[in-house]
Length: 63
Image 1 (cartoon, rainbow, N blue to C red):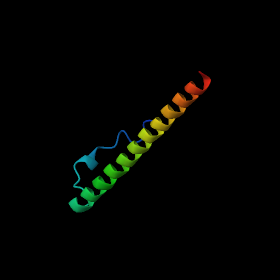
Image 2 (cartoon, rainbow, N blue to C red):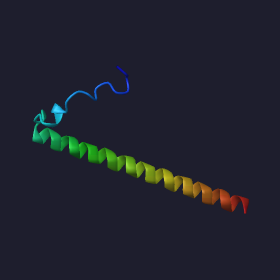
Image 3 (cartoon, rainbow, N blue to C red):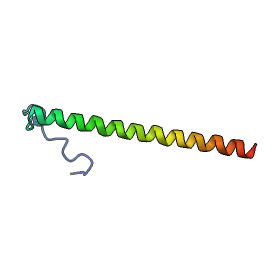
C-alpha cells in the first residue's frame, strides 16, 4: 500500500460522530483562536509598517 493513499479507503465515519467537546469548551477555543489570529494579524501589519518606514528612510537617505 502506498504511503500517499494510505487512509483514503477508510470510511468517513468521523463526520457522523457527535463532537466530543462541550459547547462551552468549543466557544472558548474559538475565542482563543480569534484572539491569536488578531495578534498575528497585528504583528504582520506592524512588520509591514516597519518595512515601509525603513524603505522610505533609505530612499530619502540615498536621494
